[in-house]
Length: 87
Image 1 (cartoon, one colour):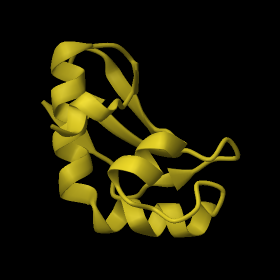
Image 2 (image 1 turned 120 degrees about the horizontal axis):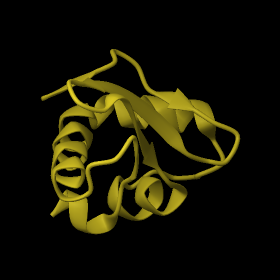
Image 3 (image 1 turned 180 degrees about the vertical axis):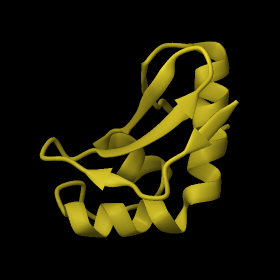
Image 4 (image 1 turned 135 degrees about the vertical axis):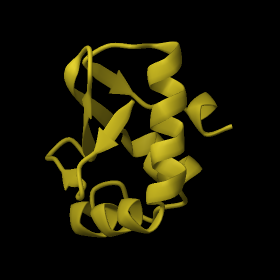
């Protein structure tokens, strides 16, 4: 079971990151890349880190569901979200 952190982190590579605790893997990092931010979550500018972080907070339930699907399919300590994880 994944227990997500309460906040998203925007990094310098135009991504948002959310961490979760998991019983076997420990800390798992989920990365939301610029293509997902723009094409899937309908963000305006992948370089606008503060706006992307706010966008991710607004879309938290959708992102957490995608993270769970992605982790079930690709269980590792680092998961890059893909478009198919949101379907």
